[in-house]
Image (cartoon, rainbow, N blue to C red; front, side):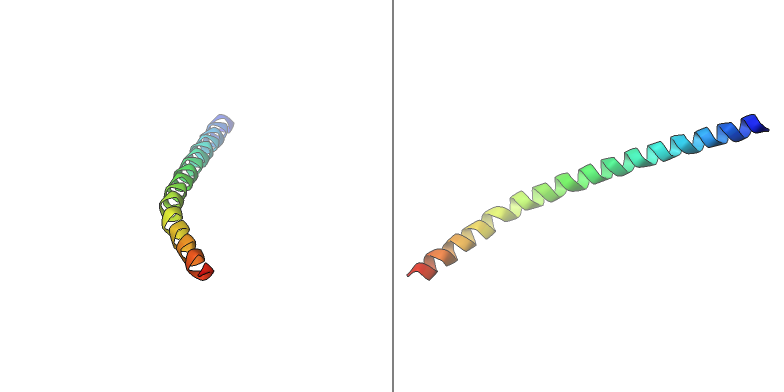
Length: 58
């Protein structure tokens, strides 16, 4: 009986490890996606700000 309880506990720990691994993977994936979006959005914003700055100068 005690042995089975121990085994169950070990299984639970393994599952927790798996879940945390998945979470970290998902997190890493989302961070990469955010970086991609960031890189996509920087150029237009940059050009618009440059354009407005040039227009403000004159």
